Image (tube, rainbow, N blue to C red; front, side, top):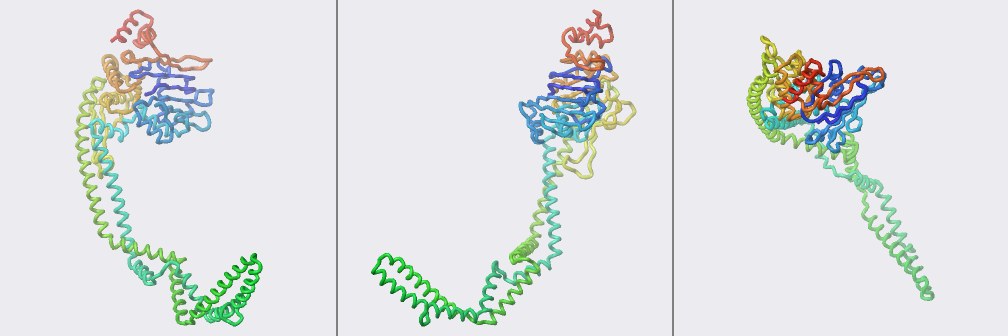
Length: 552
């Protein structure tokens, strides 16, 4: 609900603050006072494009700011948070600034925002009737949603949407799978060749390093064997080997240690050195004995290395890349082999989802047809009370070539307000006043299901008077049981039936035209209604008539 509206330097408005109440709020005033200017300013918060021409002469910018109470509307608070704006104390503050020169700006709860973000949130909070640009009921999508709400078809509509989403997802998955299989089938022979070539090579990770080491040993077998024998002889097996000489030194050091115990540690070191040297000498003997000069094995290794090299050139650059290619190709071949089963299962699932979707669409269509018939009847009954006795209201359901997420038909509200003319879309109704009254008829019926909290009716009283005006006032009060309603009016019948009345007045401030708003109570309201009656607002007769209207 709108709890405060502030407008600064907008057209003829200097600084205006408005604190509307729940229920029906009437804005009255002399012609040209600026009532519609207030609606125009508010329209900036529901998506209207900003024009620098609205900036008050002599100022740099126009500001429109509204504070909304979101109590009971967690859906709007959730959407605001989803858009990245914080919401505290159930309050939402929307602000637009229009610069005379330069960049326009917007805010949501004090955070910079885009005009479209402000418009989206504002459109969920305020519905302006009387200007075509901001009537959500003119949108086919909104008309469809309202028909579903009116007919209690929300669950059926949600099921259609969910089934369509699931069917579309699975259908896309099937198409991707079929395209993938076609691709694999086109490459099947090549994949089998690759798999066979890599599989036949029987490669192992780290194999290159092992082969390189073995090849080096075989290529230098004679040098390695000769060197190992020399080391064996010099360290351990030969005459006057290092081991023998170290053993003699060990004996000498042992004798000395018996004379000086501080040398015992050195004796143990020499003993360890002797055993290590003897071990190396023995190992060299064993190593040399195992070294073989095997040209055939060397040639076999070279051929293996050459084969790996060729595979790396084709599938590399490294051996691990070749192995990875082999695994991938094998997986693709397995995928191709299991494709028939996978496709059959997926096609069955897609067909089942499609059948469920089509059945849900049929159920939703039946609900909409029944709801459309009832809505036509109820709106038709209200039109004469609103001064549209010649009016005809229809809900047209147009079958779609292909059902979609919204069902199997388009929904369009149509009306004819002149005899002999076929009903056409609401958006083509010429008169703003007539259109507002059609909207009022719809709002009266849909008040309980329409979720927009604040409704503004401009021009709703155009071309009516007398008893029709009184009936329109009663319908507005009925809608105001479920919404905060604003009506811009020249008719005393409407103004007198409002729960709250505000007077829009115009005068001069420091030599410039200016508009302001004054809340009317008591005798001030009697005087305003008397003025609207067309008589002398100071005369006892006019005031008495005004009191009668206000007391009715």
